[in-house]
Length: 295
Image 1 (tube, rainbow, N blue to C red):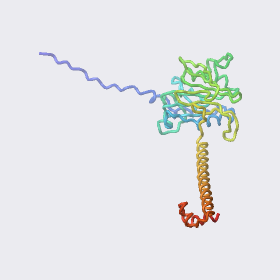
Image 2 (cartoon, rainbow, N blue to C red; image 1 turned 90 degrees about the vertical axis):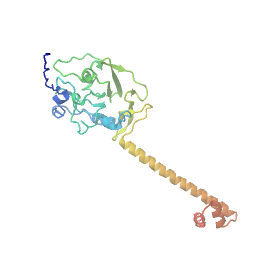
Image 3 (cartoon, rainbow, N blue to C red; image 1 turned 135 degrees about the horizontal axis):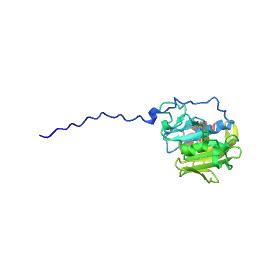
Image 4 (spheres, rainbow, N blue to C red; image 1 turned 30 degrees about the horizontal axis):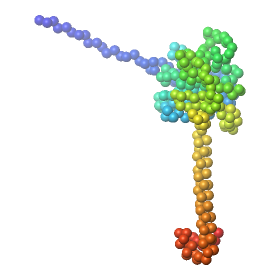
C-alpha cells in the first residue's frame, strides 16, 4: 500500500506595500517654511513665469508634463523632510495634476516615480556658490552638518539630465549635462538656440525684449531655427492682428475692384454707349451702373 503524503497548504503571503504607500506624501510634508527668505528680486518671479508661459513640448501632450518655480522638491527617501526649491524645473512623463486630480503642494520624488528632467537656477550674489558648486571657480568649504548644495542634489541625488544657470547681471547662460553620473559643462552655440535640448525638441536662448512691461535680457524658449515661442497673450495678439490684416486686405480688394468697375463704366460711357449696353458688357445691372456713375 502506497503511503499518502499530504502537502501542507501554504497561507498566501501578502506582498509588502510599495514605498509610495508607506512613505510620506506631499500631504504629509510641509509646503512652505516661514523661516525661508523671500525671493531676492522681481526677476526671480518674472523669469520663471516667462519660461512656463512659453514652454511648448511637441513630443509631450500638455497633460503629461509639469513645470514649477520655487516649489519644494523632496528628494531623499532616507531623510524625507529634506527638501530643495529650484528656481524653475520641468518633469516630463508625469501628469500635470498630482494623480491626475490634485494641484501639487510639493514635488515628492518617491511619490511621483521620477526626478525632474531639467532644473534652472537664476544666479544672485547670495546663491551663486550653492548653485554652481565646484564650477564656481573657487574652493568652497561646506560643513558636514549642512544639507547638500543645489548642484550636489541635482547631480548626486536626483540625477537631473539638464542643469542650467543664468545670470541676469552678465547675461551669461551655462549648461551642465549629466554624463556618467556627473555634470559636464557644455559649449554653447553663438546664436539662437544657444542651447538645443534634443530629447525635448526645444531650444533656449537669451531674448532682448519687454516682458510684463519690463525691458531686459530674458531666458526664453525657441524652436530649432531660433524663433521665439509665444506666450498665450502674444498668440492671441498675433491672431487678432492677422484677422485685422485679413479684413483690411479684403476691404482694399473690394475698393480696388469697385474703382476698376467705375473706370470701366466711365470709359464705355465715353464711347457713346447707353447704360443698358454698359451694364451688359460689365455683367452688371443698370442700377449698378447708375450707382457706379454716381460716385
